[in-house]
Image 1 (tube, one colour):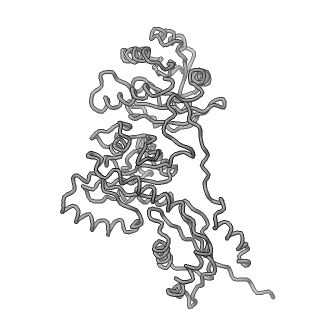
Image 2 (cartoon, rainbow, N blue to C red):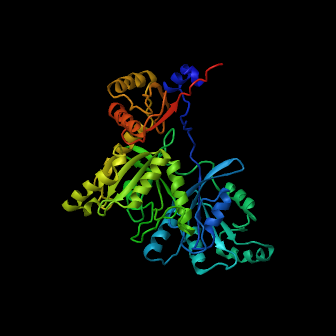
Image 3 (cartoon, rainbow, N blue to C red):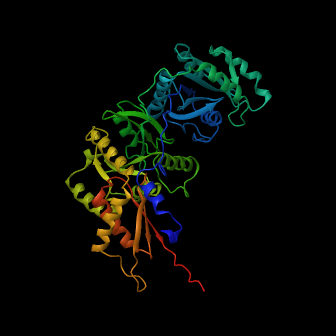
Length: 469
């Protein structure tokens, strides 16, 4: 170890439980909620991006891009609040748009204040007036934002919006930022210091779970099933979800933060427009999560898309649970075919626990929480250095590394460098073949578990000292 320029005592201390390489979770107090509502394509998501100071909401020049309640953390003048973007509200909507409108109404009912967004270049439409009538009866404070006021010429036109009966209209440009500071000041005045509904989150914050999978596999249906209410819009049109949807869900006596994500159709490099940004946000949701629930349609053959999503979770180093949905559609022939597919296509993630569920009927949904706990326990697990090296010595004595270049490499020392995911570093006298590293990983799992978590093994080869002349 001295030859490597490393202090063995320092490595032992880190591997035996020091906080180095671990993530601390601070207790974040609940924040008040502002719901942003309005008819489709008035620029709500553009305004949301301006108010939160970053581009998170998917924006495209077609109506109906946002379809769910999307929560974002916002900060202004030292005060934090949660901003909820909603789909366009239509009073007489049908089908998918009716579900979108229901999400907007739910946001209005549960928020601490509401921001109604109206397109100043068009003026108050019949739909705007219908929304205003609903909001005038609500108990929450209501603010009125007149968007697309990009220059002085439209400022005078906002005066006509007083007739909506919601007080002073705030002219603002989501595109250029004009008037956004004044609007945020008004938002802080309207919001209470603490939210009306403190929610379910307990001390330390809930564990973060990303729901990922290809389009129309049932992610939103599963989220609605585990939460016991309609949190995400569900429709038989593939790709209904565009933004990641955050929901605090009480499951098996514990609160979890579930994130429903957009289904991934293509690789991010080949996706375009709305699908491109949705793909980026899905990848970001995986990175921000601690455990990913990959949903696979059990009634269909495992597809390349399914394997690509699993690879994304592996690359991100997140804990993994495979949930096979639509089990109510699986017959005996499909079960036999699936067994072959699992052995052929998912052999590299044999360590991931599998649950067969039906989001439609609720079958075995209660089994998801225990598998999440198991995966996260493995993801957080740390093996003491002494125990690790004692085990490794026995394994190597029984099965030494293969000879390479006429010499057999020796493993000098091993330590667990970090958790989340468990990462082990082997200091050796020579290179270890990939096959032998996989062998060590299998034996490591047999001895210590790590069910549901990826395990990384890195090799550091000791450099030979140059002879002094």
